[in-house]
Length: 124
Image (cartoon, rainbow, N blue to C red):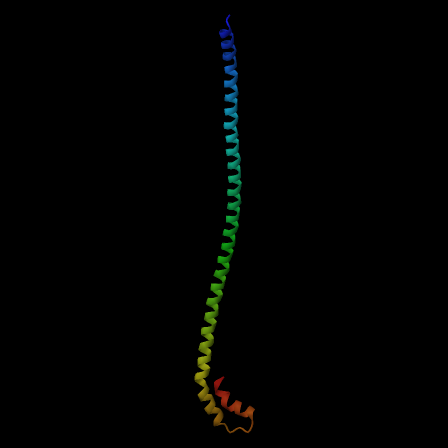
């Protein structure tokens, strides 16, 4: 055996070790990439779940506000109805005021109770 064949044998026998180390390093890097991707996926899922919870809370708050706005709209409509009835009653009282004033002015009663009795007797 010559020196060249000995060196060649040693070189070839070491090449598979270098190839194995390179393959192991490549698998480690690629596997680490998968682990990082899985971690990022888990973090993203946690963030999505948190946002979905917040979104659900906001939807519930909006629903509650909409119910309150509906109640206020109903109360407003009721108040408008009461205001219209009060305006109608006031307009009737104002319309009757001149006739009542005339009745009071023509009264012959000597005191206030008598005037009211005479003037307001027919208005009950």
